[in-house]
Length: 228
Image (cartoon, rainbow, N blue to C red; front, side, top):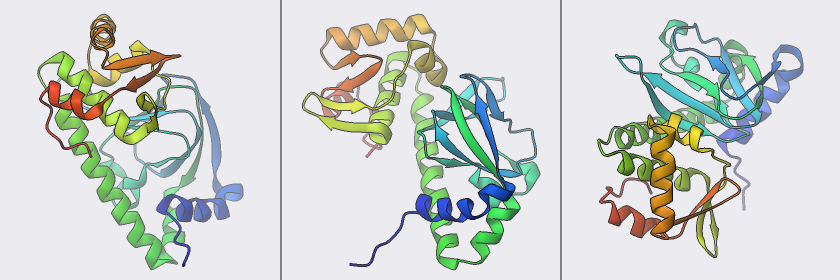
């Protein structure tokens, strides 16, 4: 069987070819901004470790979460298609993060050498856009508890590991982080998580949340089935 490499693997190979000469390594503390949507976006980023948050700012200045990215993720990919002044989102470190950045034009040169890689890039961008739209839609829900549950379901989709107890979200998430990602207060997050634990819908061990039955949780809170 032909070995088909993933988009991230192929792009990683392209970045590796120019990494030593053109890339820079950065180490960021939790909460530190990586780039702002107002800044010209001139680099592609690859996280070596840590969790990165992508977000937008609405008209009244509130953050709207777009995605949480695990380690070994590329971001800033829209700079390959958009003008430098058209960057549409910001990025910051949720946990301590180590990343490398490579000038966009160098990555673009590698993409021009491979039509297959360019096609994979477009599919990856479309997939991320669709997931971002779903995330934004659910996080706009009026009821605070439903918003938190929706976000947990999104995390279980993107970071979930199947265990005997259910789906474990393979991220260490503090109440403060969940509050920031859902635009809720930390007190509200603590209260709602406590209610979910009391209802035996979730369990938490060392900041990792396990959803015992995601389908039942979604149905109980009447959340549309758009997360699969």
